[in-house]
Length: 162
Image (cartoon, rainbow, N blue to C red; front, side, top):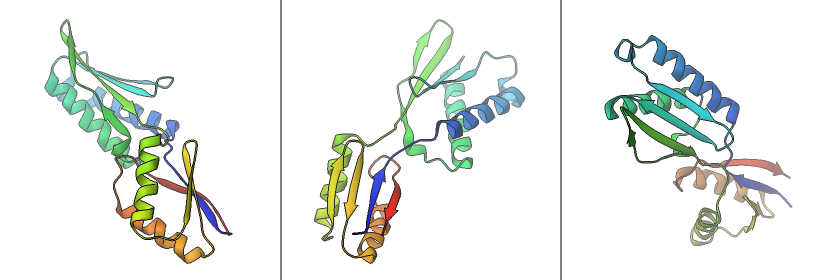
């Protein structure tokens, strides 16, 4: 019976490349010359920390990071932007990277599949959803429908089996 998995995974090497490109652009930008602005990736915590002298510069750093993520074909929905806070003369903002399907989002996706009238079997299995049906066309139609929806995280469809 044909099946596939719905997952939400991030590729840390692509994020590391986007952060590296942001750091290179930061070094060449005239408006950041002489400032203590910094972009740092903490891979263990899956966090990006932006540090600058003003909130405007932190906003500019976040915009540069988003631009480089889009260039690397990463969805900006993976970013969970936290509030800025001041410490001394610098402003700091943390961005958590969303990885994996949490239970609430998985339940929303399964509920959408049922409410949309698809006659497929969807089962939550940890941080993925396994969807199966007798007809391959029904699964492909479901994938097209889910690509149109927004659940707050980017979805990938893998492990498609006939």
